[in-house]
Length: 257
Image 1 (cartoon, helix red, strand yellow):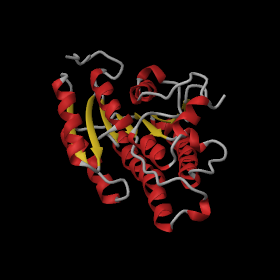
Image 2 (cartoon, one colour):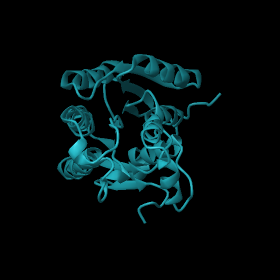
Image 3 (tube, helix red, strand yellow):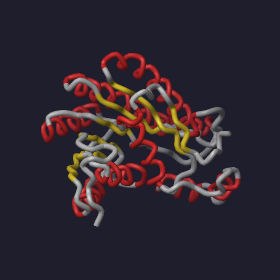
Image 4 (tube, one colour):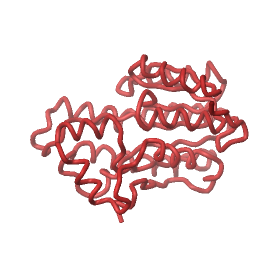
């Protein structure tokens, strides 16, 4: 059994994690709780959320969950309200939920896919940050980390709309960092590289061999485990990163070098 560390990296903090039902979000839920945070897990699929929350509790952590669809503004606001109802404040937010569509050139992207990608990957974090800042302001500050992607840097012909939405999220992150720094709210982003999540497995199913090609171009010669990405988010959210804001941190095994 993993004992929750009340004096850990995130000891005593209240944290919201979106996209927490699987992959990086689920890994973050386990890690943040083990590092002392009380976590509230948000995602669209309640069964997945409940399974992760039960695992966190079994390991000695404090976890609650709330269904949240980042494409729905009312759902986003309700998730923040639930955190405040449970704990009275919000200290940390990891905006990790994302959507992806099958790869292909931009002229073949259906309009519905374009709208969905922008709703979840850009509008969703914008809605979440707006609500999170309001909650953090009331308690004197906090920290936010958004999940971007190495696909946001440079050209991304296979996933053009995904890459564009994530690049716009980088800009939102930087703008928020400048706007809310005076209120003691830090805002950063992580840009994961190839990570073995359901998303990358779906991409492999759509484009067989893509993972092998990505790994071959990686200096470390492998893909990341979701827990490795969660570690970077935890550090940025922690007080140990107290002078870091407005950063988009590559967590990509050196792919971008």
